[in-house]
Amino acid sequence: MISYCSIPSVIIGECSKGIVPIENSIEGPVGLTLDLFAHKIDLNIEKEIIIPVSHNPSG
View (cartoon, rainbow, N blue to C red):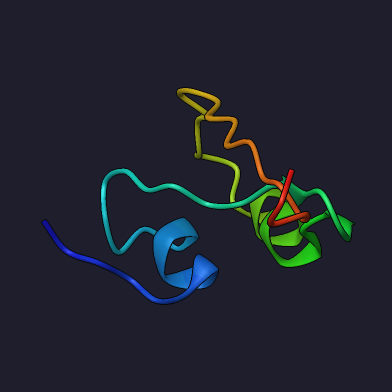
């Protein structure tokens, strides 16, 4: 398995599959991901993964 440290390296096709953020609970949509998706027409979204995040360490 190969790890990439940037969204563009996944989206430009340096690997056959990858996980990239589309939105987050603080800032909303991840602009870089959405911009790259808009310009790379042969990509497919295969699955959605929702990761619950708590911003309150005690709750």
